[in-house]
Amino acid sequence: MAYAEMLNDALGISDDQWNQALDDTFGPSPQERAQQAQQAQQAQQAQQAQQAQQQGESGGK
Image (cartoon, rainbow, N blue to C red; front, side):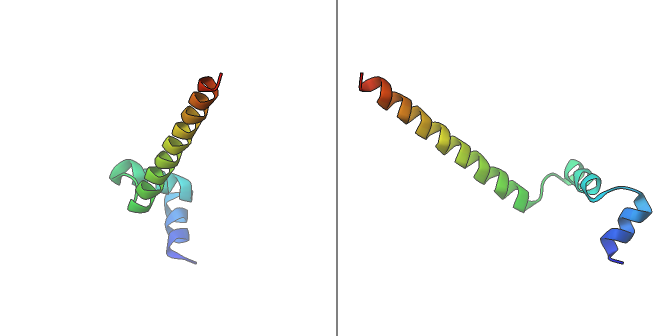
């Protein structure tokens, strides 16, 4: 049995609950922070592309 499984059994919580407790206590991991930053950047780029498209459509009329 893996250490994580023994810990989950001993505490009676799932992996998701354990991960949430860690995030609540210590904040997101560096990997999660990088992923969140990348997602935010992609969302911003998509919004900018949509705005450019709308401006192009309204400017052509």
